[in-house]
Image (tube, rainbow, N blue to C red):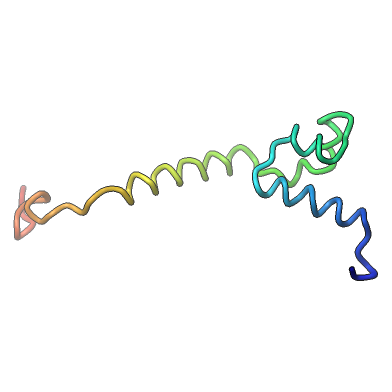
Length: 86
């Protein structure tokens, strides 16, 4: 291990990896040995994605799944060979 990396640094790295991989507050609290979730949130709260980011990610994933499973429409389905189905 490098001389400038401390056990405290490794502890923070461990917590940040857990959070990045989707661990919730209670799991990180337990792994870090914090007495309360408040301590965990006070220390690492800035690392969790905010609600806006989570909802954007969730809806993007849902749309990606739906759109990738659709088969492309044929020219007849979208208005005939010339595309003038109006």
